[in-house]
Image 1 (cartoon, helix red, strand yellow):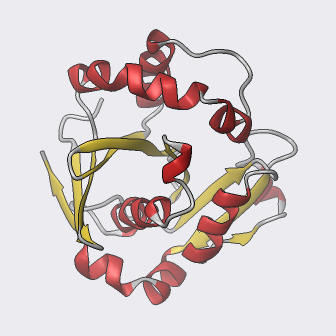
Image 2 (image 1 turned 90 degrees about the horizontal axis):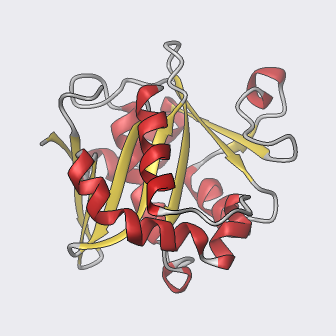
Image 3 (image 1 turned 30 degrees about the vertical axis):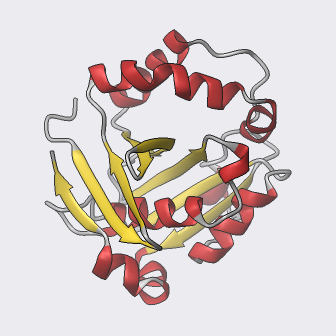
Length: 200
């Protein structure tokens, strides 16, 4: 159970970006919009699910991930919900898996996902108590999800076909990518300097 919830903020490109770990009540408030985003046909294909998700499914999924120690974020642009993201599978050995969704397909492919990903990675790699002190972050991507693959390439990820990398695959056909702390720091000093890491 997360007692102290993280709050990440970044003013960039004329917009206020905010990523917050929600309370149970906050999640319930936003569950209808999240369910609609997950069920959008374009998103469902990229996320690799076929069954319609309800608000209760969203809340249950968040609870299950929380029980496994995931750090989950709601993403806001200028106060409006834009999507969600998480760091999951924290293995106690300095690694986790990153996943994210910008909810509205019309808002995808415009750099928003990259900026939110930078925020979450800055938190993941920052040393405690501000961040998690991770050494590596993995991503498991459906091969057809070209937009996500572009985001991860911009971040500095590379494919990891090793057995250790493949252990992070959500599905057998997924592409597994990885980035380490040093690569992120070298490629994205602006995220380390400008993203404000805090607690609620």
